[in-house]
Length: 113
Ligand SMILES: NC(=O)c1ccc[n+]([C@@H]2O[C@H](COP(=O)([O-])OP(=O)(O)OC[C@H]3O[C@@H](n4cnc5c(N)ncnc54)[C@H](O)[C@@H]3O)[C@@H](O)[C@H]2O)c1
Image 1: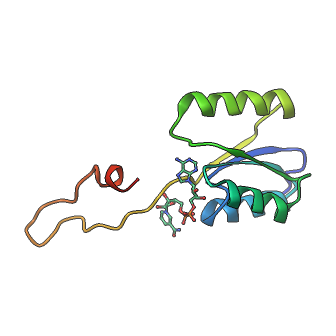
Image 2 (image 1 turned 180 degrees about the vertical axis):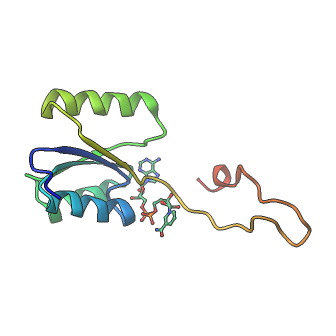
C-alpha cells in the first residue's frame, strides 16, 4: 500500500488499535494526525513516529465543534484529509442478558466515564 502524500486522521491514535493503525499508515508513507484525549500518550506516539510523519491534537471526539475546528485546522495547514480511521472509544464488559433475564444497561458507559 502506497499512501505517499496522503493525510490521515486517526481518532484514538495514541493507544491500542488506533496506535497500530497509525504505525501502518506512517509505514505506508502517509502523514498522520492523531486525535486523542490522552496527551502524554499522544505526544509519545509522535516522538516514536517522528514529527515529520505524525502530529497530535488533544481532542475529545464527542465534542462536535472541537472536531470540526480540528478538521478545519488540518485542511488549512495540510490542505487535505484522505483517510479517517475511528478507534477512539472505551470498552466495557457486561453480560448481554444476566441470570435474571435482564439485558445490560445501555447507559452503562455513562456511569463509568
Ligand atoms: N482492542 C480490541 O480487541 C477491541 C475489540 C473490539 C472493540 N474494541 C473497541 O475499540 C475501541 C479502541 O480499543 P483499544 O483497544 O484500541 O482501546 P485503547 O484504550 O487502547 O485506545 C483507545 C484510545 O482512545 C482514546 N479515547 C477514548 N475516548 C476518547 C474520546 N472521547 N476522544 C478522544 N480520544 C478518546 C483513549 O485516550 C485511547 O488512547 C474501544 O472502543 C474498544 O472498546 C476494541
